[in-house]
View 1 (cartoon, rainbow over the protein chains, first blue to last red):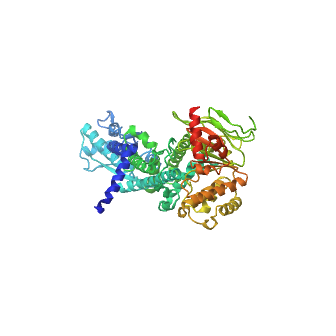
View 2 (view 1 turned 90 degrees about the vertical axis):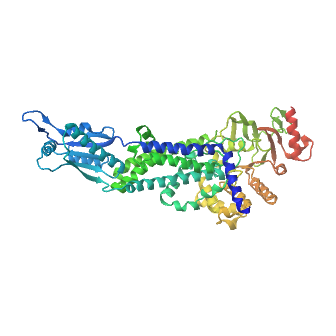
View 3 (view 1 turned 30 degrees about the vertical axis):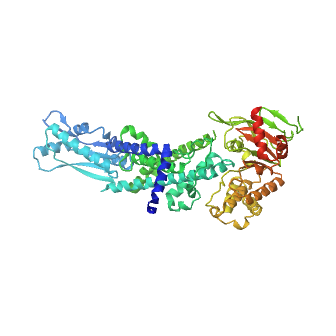
Length: 372
Length: 261
């Protein structure tokens, strides 16, 4: 029977959980919520992808003296406007510049003799094919596949409508991410996310440690302001998260996890810290970790790690744009897959800084409200 | 009644007033949490350089009062003052030293690093911190433990380091929230020696405790119950007033008497 003593520990853990209704609710609801977000995000189609059309097609007169036919116009008209955000480009170089700057994902260039050659090939002129040049950012696999599919579909549809054969081959020129695989897309994203998660968890542990050990109260009684108290651990943990996560077990905040918050009687503590749920409860450190795990799952699903933000349903996208990992993942991919420097990823950095200021302000206000 | 030490029975309890020279610490102080009143109109006057003990059972409102004085908890009603400044005021922080119930130290730092950290937080220069650290380590008899991690210290040692951290900036007022809870009797005696030494330096100490036997060491004490001050005065005066020979019985008797009023 002694061997089964571990069951006593298991029972104790379950009893602890049963008495902690909020954790129980979190455990029940959070996975369902995470799966729901996962399902929504995963089932979404790629939409609103920047696509530049450079139409140099001069068209041709099927009947001498008759109207000029331009098959390229029909192709453009048939483009899937839900998937592609179609814009006109003046030249191939201008279109390429848009792709290089991240303003568009792809561009199609119709040559001046596109219609003439398609019609000629249909009449058996040379049994050759007409090459349609497509420039594309292939670093984002899902988006690249969606664009390729849209181009193939539109060519088939247009030729079918015109009752013609399809003597067109699409030549794809990768501006970024040539021969990129899913892993190339996934790894930079997950790296950025892991750094984000480690930073969040370490910050969380620091704040919980400060509260359970009483040092938070002690610091609040000093000339330090709430902003000082909130900002400094976040900056320090950000360094830890990005540079030295392995050293975290030596940090003063971490050992406090073994402590439990004292019974405060009628003292009603309000949430404090980085805006994450769980403060103000005897087993808050456990709930903080669980909370961070569940919010991590939701963030992962909407931050564009497994699939691009462009593939997330439009109504869910605003959520993607208010979570920091979205920008971290984007910046990480831009640097690793496109070789971009600060001059191009500054928007992501500004967004991250703005979100940092916002969340730190919320945390500071939360800490002030705790006094009530 | 100014300047006298005569007994007054008021709606807030039996009070042997402090002399008019005693600065006010709280005036009609109130703290509520929703419908629950934790502190109900508390008036306290504490003389400079005395040890004032706030005594009462758990839930009497002692810690809440201390937290309001430290600015850790917002005052719902009334006023609180620290060295003449009305709470909340950012300048108050430099004039008080707060020792919470927990040891509240960074266990991953050494004794030296903890004292240094709190010294720097209070704006002391490196030279000032070094000087204060030497004095304090000598005062708490931990000079030989300067470079030891706090995690490796015994509970009593941690309490002493915690006291040192509260005193590093030489505050005129020390607020000690049950500093002797969980401390063995021998160390408790040493702690009271420390407190008397601090008092000898001209500092004021407000101490909360629910150990009635400790209250005899205070210059004056205030009995608290249900957020109210039920009696205040010198320990022997309160015993005489209650007609008993120990503070525990004095508390129970006076508590009962106030209930009947």
